[in-house]
Length: 386
Image (tube, rainbow, N blue to C red; front, top):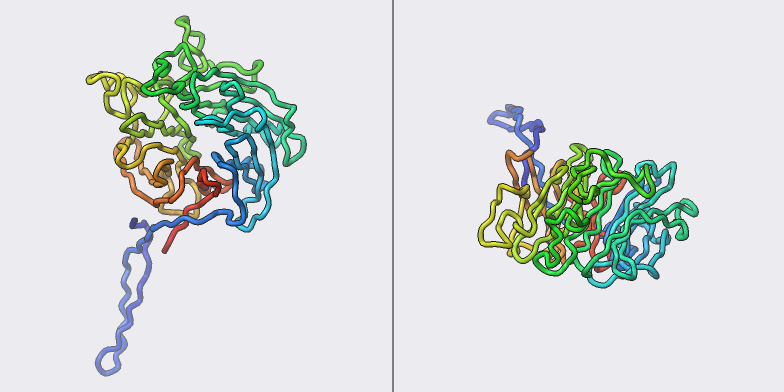
């Protein structure tokens, strides 16, 4: 991949002519950033047990928290020479990790440096999706007995459990829930606003017991029986979503059924069409009113990948060609792409690298540099080759 930058450099061309005349020609020519990428093991001395998430508390400590699917969270120093892990939390005795279940999400409270609150998303032993808050025992250890239940959602199947939680720029907690599993929205949840499934939720955990509903949620104080927690719906399995640190847009990758994977910009009250639509294509019936739903900004067919893993809009400094682009991947084939989206005027997608690993998640360190989790046990990073 080659990208032209907005900078230029001065070339001084020196030619020795006939009779010893020295000719100096100044050429002001454009420079080029040759942005080819490889991947490297970010922590070559460490391995993890089925890592599914990597998170920074943004507290100045330069620590990273690694989420392991079986129910443990490890802390490491964000240093490629790191050789040790510290166990932050072990709830493996209360986690069901078969299928797409497990310890799936983590988010630090925006005021973490003062209140020490850590929020996690996991599947309990009866198969329910649990959002809980934990306090600290010490700087590097959560107090397991401090668990405070925020939300419990009954799940009818072991797949399409969602898993992402994150605090938005508005200070509210956002929660991704899949449609409840099966194939083709077996349980009819994604278009049913009387269930939390098939939705992204938005709640205020700083007031109420255990939370309150933001007054600008789309179904706040509705009289139809719709769940007030719903922020957006019509989603199949939004496994990973993230907020752009600059624009504050909410990006969500929704895992498809048989044919299409999609990327959505999530808006308050949005209906993203599942199972009427898979991507921009009618799914449930041979024809449908596509204009009645919010279309994805990008989709790819299963000839390119079969299970999208959402990432982040890159806002770091080490990969200048990628600044402002949405970096994401595919769990099945290990491909990583960069999506350049200019607010609807143009969308371009470029392949960055094929990894011979299954990509479960992307993460950001304190400097907004990207990290990549592989279910096989390693954490990787992209490196620019010049």
